[in-house]
Length: 209
Image 1 (cartoon, one colour):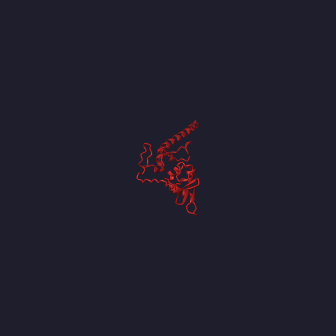
Image 2 (cartoon, rainbow, N blue to C red):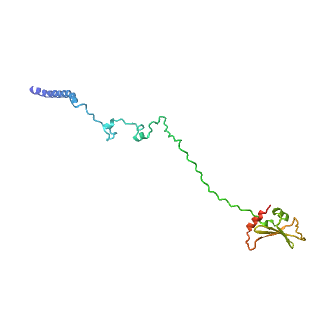
Image 3 (cartoon, rainbow, N blue to C red):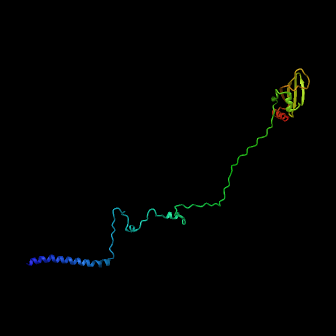
């Protein structure tokens, strides 16, 4: 009888001891919290988060990528520009700047061609009539007849031009108007002076009426 009571008391005492310990711990919890302050929160790191991220960085708000501006963008943007319409400010040009003069290329001046006096070649009178020669150059300075050849002589300052006309059956100095020029000759007027044919033809042209 005494053994049964002893076995019953031992578990009963252990149960009361555990109950008193639980009540004691429950009553002492507010005092422990008051002494140590608020309970320390232990952050929970999920597998998707970066391990290098600190709890302080997790609590900071993340600005949207479209609205985040760097220091370079703020410095480059105008202070008073109205960007509400989406148009970029247009820089006004200074209209008071002096106009640059138009420089025209200088054309080289062509040298003037020297004046060349016209000439007349006596060979062009061959086949023309005596009356045609008189109408173009006037009356000859000298006339003479040698056999059947009549000579019309035109004297210039530096030369002499002879025109030959064939006459048949007459020795008169008066030639018929239809008499033709058969040939011509050109010679210097001064003996032993070289003949300048171009100069002679120029002087002959000056006699032209």
